[in-house]
Length: 138
Length: 138
Image (cartoon, rainbow over all chains, first blue to last red):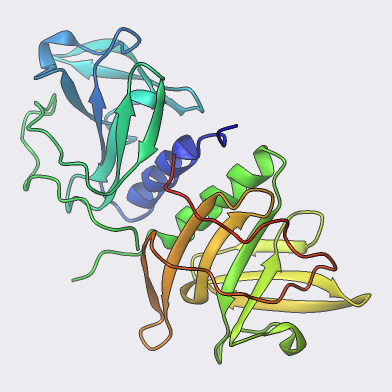
């Protein structure tokens, strides 16, 4: 029997680490049928979202879903992302964080530190200062 | 400039994952000058401690120290373990969790999933059912 996933716990941990240290938490998401995000910002089947307190409203990182409200072009949208579709969570400022492998079919993910992040489009006006470089956890 | 460590956040995350799923969280610790643990249970410079709610009192997993009270041979002892000395946190029942590398000199640690856990002694009466087998995070 597979173990229950630690992924939601790790995503919450890195989110808290970002917030405590003044970093901006970004998630890279593989877009699938259960992913509710602004389709116009999806690129190559993926999207990068800012989930900082400043950029979101009513953010909940649950065990199955990340849900929040965010504004795109001045319009508030309701977003919902399955944890299984999260490819990475990292600090925009330095790329520190964790990467995962998404598995849409199984709706489960296996952690890895070898995932290469895609050139995902960014709903924020300005792009991240550097391409995310995910590091081994410290 | 090195990034602030994510280790305390990850240790808290795995601890919470264990508690939510009914697993018993164990930590493997490299004993050093700042480690206050019952010396009689230290083996090869390391100790394994049960940090479940049932086995501890006043447990605090801070950013620098893990502190708690636990009973050994019926006597309550005050324990204190620097986060930098934590080699791993895992579920006793299945070995799921995370391993780290301890660095006593720098009082910092670098995460890794290749650490092999030692044959550490266990202050609990019965040994874990299996040798911890640390897995990739899910």
